[in-house]
Image (cartoon, rainbow, N blue to C red; front, side):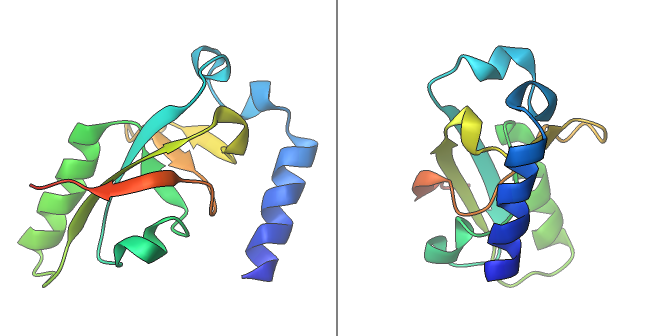
Length: 110
């Protein structure tokens, strides 16, 4: 998705890392992140919304099953701090927004 890549580059260019993520994350070599989703593992890295909380990812997994999703996966991956587009905890989700930067993705059994 070229348009997404364009806006990701702009977000990183105009918002310094100190404004995009919490101070304690800046010095970390990599951050472990989680995601519940219906996409296959090879497509998960292109999903924008991940979380630093395994418990929150598990909540989304359980919610999808509750509402009848036939397939749901729980993924874990790593990302470098500078690759994060934005971090927010406004809804207590510890949400990491990224695009195509998650590495070492593996499925976690639930």
